[in-house]
Image 1 (tube, rainbow, N blue to C red):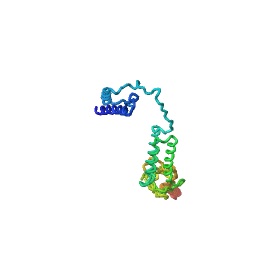
Image 2 (cartoon, helix red, strand yellow; image 1 turned 30 degrees about the vertical axis):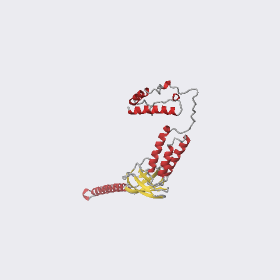
Image 3 (cartoon, rainbow, N blue to C red; image 1 turned 180 degrees about the vertical axis):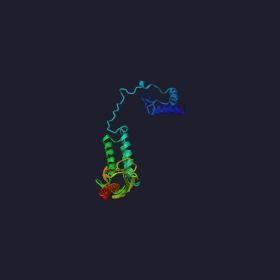
Image 4 (cartoon, rainbow, N blue to C red; image 1 turned 135 degrees about the vertical axis):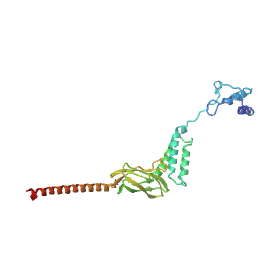
Length: 290
């Protein structure tokens, strides 16, 4: 109720200010509404209307009865604008913000890109941009993010030879940028297992690092090997997709052992058969049987 009386006093004071300034209060109208356009709170409006009804200098009418425009009223023509509709671009800005946050995990804390990208992201949220300017800002910022992620790469068209069931694969990861970058390295293959899982490595500017990946072979042969580089949070792809080839001869020893065992069994059977035949021939030629 106290808030209602305060509002009523403010309205009466505004009416008096118009009179003191030489204005005509009967040409002024005041619209009472909530800031959101929803129905006002009854606990505020009921005491407010009662207080205003007791003020003889004020005349309350419904919105439909208010004379909003007259012949002498100056027409207001709003200028046409091509400003971007922030309500329509909020999803684009949200995705762009997520991409900035994910790509930023590649950088050291003191990298200058943090402040630059934050400033560019704030600029895309300005309602002073028109649709074309907004599109250029978004395209430019995404281009900067993608350019940085493309600075990290691994050699393509490589073939690795694994000579044992358990071995280490050495994969070179290169950073072509002028700032240290961190990435998550993950390998995937249908016939190989990687017990250690993904690794996060940091590569110095304009240099390369060898990532040692323990590998467990499940079969012999040549198999495709996918190298997956992502931001350290694992949410955004880094570099270009790369497919290598792994040639596994890790289980060849088992095949040789099996082949050797088969040969020994065959030789033993042949020798035993040859001896039995010779023994039978000797018995038939014995003088006692003549």
